[in-house]
Length: 309
Ligand code: NDP
Image (tube, helix red, strand yellow):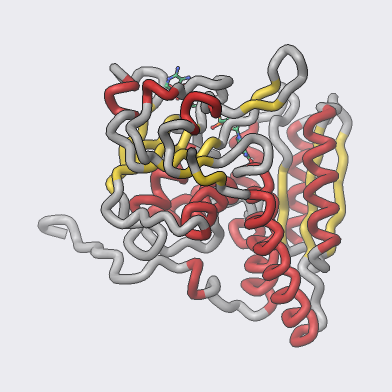
């Protein structure tokens, strides 16, 4: 039977570490890191997510405020709110809870968040820095998956990591993290999506399989090889109200060497990473310091001028 990777316990330890570092930061600077959450519309799930994030902030000694706009709010109103928060020196991190109401252009709003306050790591500048191996912020869910692998003692060095899904929030940054030079990365990465042919032939090659498709119990035991390590990012609600992942836990667990459960796997990590990024944002704005050493990929970027450049 597979080792169960306990995301709840690992996230709790990470939150404790962030709380301890936050206490030191407050002591040294007199500043409390402050996360501002923007919630537009009446989506009940979003309201719950924002409340959970705020509660986690408060428990770790960070300040959190929420900024609500009505369902019918215009793009201008939302952009004006983001601009106010950008300009407020007391706010260090800005989180825009997705999805936004349909009349609002999500990309325009996310691009408007100051890159120094972009604790979700969605801004093109931060995505670019990440892809060059010098991240300012860690993409929360993918970094949570990486942390789970490290804490479970899974070596990614030279491993074939197959990522199912190519979204901007999970799949792409996940692949990017695994591809970096340095510890917890250095993997050979394959990214699959809805147009990939013969998916099972690819997933069976995975030493580490990261599923982020949003399809309940999609990955079955026949799609994996014995000994695989499985990280299940999916959160899906079944008709009977149960939460299930993108992986069919029952059949995959008999073949895997380690697997994350749903719930209690990746989910708790996302919030812990958000707290960590809020502290990083406060450090950047108050001290102007670069990210903590463990957040930086090691080695040269290997960049060269293009021929003739
Ligand atoms: P998206 O819907 O944005 O992306 C899904 C990806 O899966 C797409 O790239 C899509 O391909 C691909 N895909 C869909 N169906 C198939 C298929 N049959 N075969 C191969 N690829 C397929 O989802 P997200 O990335 O935002 O989220 C994925 C899951 O992770 C969801 O269940 C979500 O709830 C969960 N999630 C969990 C978080 C956590 O904290 N634990 C945080 C964020 C998300 P294509 O691009 O071609 O459409």
